[in-house]
Image 1 (cartoon, helix red, strand yellow):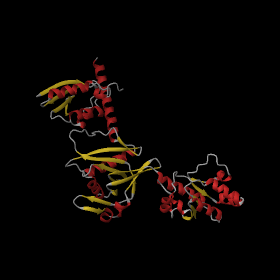
Image 2 (tube, each protein chain N blue to C red):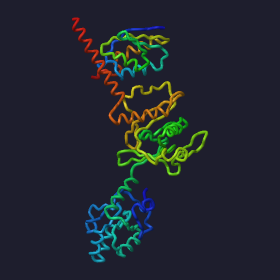
Image 3 (cartoon, rainbow over the protein chains, first blue to last red):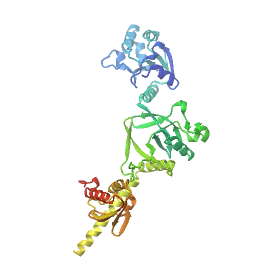
Image 4 (tube, helix red, strand yellow):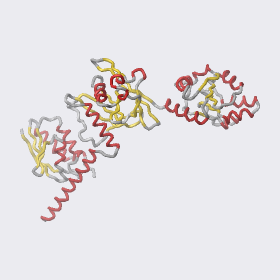
Length: 320
Length: 92
């Protein structure tokens, strides 16, 4: 559950917020990632009023309230402040009626003031709340960036995920995080992976221990987050299993409802996994640019077969 | 043990990437040596690129030669796969 307190603590500076009253209500839940300018509701029309959004009073609302009688003003404000309203933010440079401050204190409803302009605040609040409310998950794996492609390396424990990542870093690619990857769905369109703050840029290599990649290889070899473009599953070579030999059919895996290109990469002595991961990354880039080697080859092959068929037909017709 | 027979490619598009992939998958587990001969060109049937190089069209006659312990069985399975158009029966 996301609380007003979380928003205040995390984004106090970004939103220029200062708490004026209702500290006791900081544990009120924020259930909707939207801000609400009450407008008509403040004029007394409360039909279809959505009370679960953070209320924002701009200069317009404040000047309207000032024009009202003291009692009417209080009545109207009471009408929009419900037990489910998370908080009230005033984005206006002028003074705030003491009655509103006292009301918020009484109702234990957090009352904030922001130094930002109304529209600027409302846009930023919506954008920050959307980020906070976006679906997320965590998974076991290593997230790296090779040739600009975000690769989530998965596989069983001790199959060599961290070693592969280390090899990639050594070749100038970047580490985002190792072991635990936090994945977030951004704008419903793409997945962004990042690592927990505590273990950021750290890796555990068996036989060596914990290493700090940023310190060892330099800041250029790490980054904090990256869009996940492909998933590669590293697994022990299994003679019984058939591995893709052509690459005509792209496999996908489901992460937070999005289909992400998925490759199974079998490992055995003599196979340079780092090089193979680099090749998959490059091939992915090529596919994104509209070149699919497997498809192009098959097309060429079908053309050759057709040509041969035509020739054979001509010859047989000539003989006949 | 050796076994051989001539089979006809029935796939409308010939022996392209998908059927070739099926053949390779089928032969992955066997220790038999399998060769395909088409137009005087003999290739190892376990190598996908070699199979594709044949560029065998529909109705092409391919000589299949299998050498090894389970030669008869492998040959039988291959003939059946050719017959069934490698799962592409009914494709246009």
